[in-house]
Every structure is written in structure tokens, then in C-alpha cells.
Image (cartoon, rainbow, N blue to C red):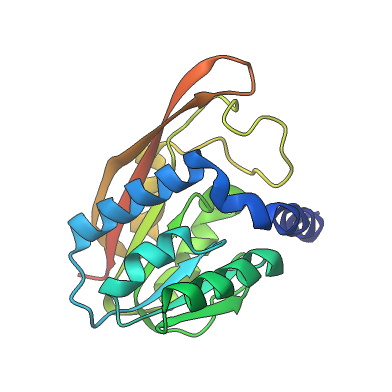
Amino acid sequence: MTDFVTQANSERFNSIAASWDDNPVRSGIARGVAGAILERIAPTGRERALEFGAGTGLVTALLSPSLRSVVAADNATGMLAILRLKADELGLTNVEPCEADLSKAVPGGPFDLIFSSMTLHHIEDIPALLARLAASLSPGGRVALADLESEDGTFHGEVAGVMHHGFDLQTFSGWLRDAGFTDIDIRRAHVVHKTGADGRAHDYPVFLALARLGG
């Protein structure tokens, strides 16, 4: 069932890749998350990074000028095609698009930084994912993971491939500790203002979880 859901999810994202960047909610989340990562991590420019669920590269495009290199991974080839065009247009020569499904394996480690934005809710087994991320980091490497705080299901509505209606932050912190992370710091990075699937206006908080591998 998981492989079927992953394929359906990938096909859906392929079908909407061309118009993905036109949505102001998505671009607003990307700016909020990227800004929070830059402020709280303060990259040195020497980091080799991975973004998983990179999509069309909304966050990668904002962070890559502050990093040595970024492997931008996604399992939707349509999204990666847009990302490649964007990287060429913007001259992002340190960005390497990569087709990968992180629910199965992490490509090309070790990394100094692994980040993602609004991807975790598509992955069923988060503790297993965090263990794979830890195994793909350099000693002392960091994760910067952003997604929705717990919500009532109205953010996406009935959309295939959504495994979680946001996350309880205490539970998420515990998963990070269990995966071997320390210096865990989870704060709100952005708030999405939009009409939910119930037709009502909602505020949906987006958290950013920072953590370091080991002591």
C-alpha cells in the first residue's frame, strides 16, 4: 500500500509541477522557512547540504547561495524538471537535482545539513526517516525540518498521500532524541493564512525543528 500511495503522490505532483510556484501560499512558506533556517543556523558557506522533498526548489534556491552545495532530492520527475530549469536560469551551479524516495533511502551522504519544508507529512514512518537522516550526516551535522503543527485535517482536505495532519511538537522532539539528535530546538517559523477544506479561514502554524547529531 505504501508504494501505491508513493506512486500516486508522485504522479499528482508531476501533474501540477508547472504551476507549483504560482501559489502564493507555497512561496510564502518557502520564504518563511528559508529565512528561519538562515537566521538560526547561520551557514558558513562550507556546508554540503541535502534538501529532501525539494519540489521545484523554492527553498533550495533561497538557501543555496549560503551553502557550498545542495543535493535537491525529490521523487517527482516533473518537479525536478522545473528545478533544473530554475537552477539554470538563476545560475545556481552548486545545486544538484536528484531523483530519490527518502522513505526508502537517503542519497549521497554524508551531509553537514539536511533540510526539508512541508514534506514530512507525506512520509508515513517518521522515526525510521529520522534514523536514516542521522546515518547520512557528518559528525555534528544538523537537520532543519519544517512542517505543519497539528491541525484538524482542513489544510489539505481529502488529498492522496497525506499521512499526517501536522505534528505534535513534543512527540516530534522525542522522535529526534530517539534518533540520536541533541540540541533540539523547535520554534514556529511561519503561519499560513488560508481557507481550509471546510470553507473557513484558518491560521496554520509551521514549525522549524533544528537538531544536531550527537553531542
